[in-house]
Structures are given as structure tokens and as C-alpha cells.
Length: 72
Image (cartoon, rainbow, N blue to C red; front, side, top):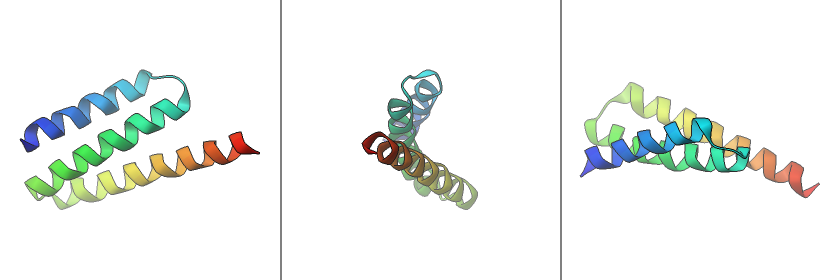
């Protein structure tokens, strides 16, 4: 089950690389990052867990910044 979640995360992040507009790209990064975070916790890989936390938080920050600038 967790391998499927990890694979979906990888697919979503891969699609996010080519996705437009930027908000959609960030959304795909966030969801894919969360899926890969769940998988990295399952496999108990501390380096991958930290990497996914940083990656997902970066995408959340970027999306929030885009949303703020769109509302200004």
C-alpha cells in the first residue's frame, strides 16, 4: 500500500515539473511531497523524511506567496 502512495507522490511531483500555471505546480508538489513523506516515514529513512519536509514546506511557502500577491 505505501509503495503505491510513494509511486503516486513521485508521479505527481513529476507532473508538477511540467505543469502550468505555477499554482497548479505548487499544489502538485505539495500533494506529491506529502505522499512521499508518508512513504519515507513508512520506510523509516530519516534523510528522506527531512528532505520531504523541506520540499513540501517550500512548496507551501511558494504557494502562499503567490496567493498573497494575487490578492494584492
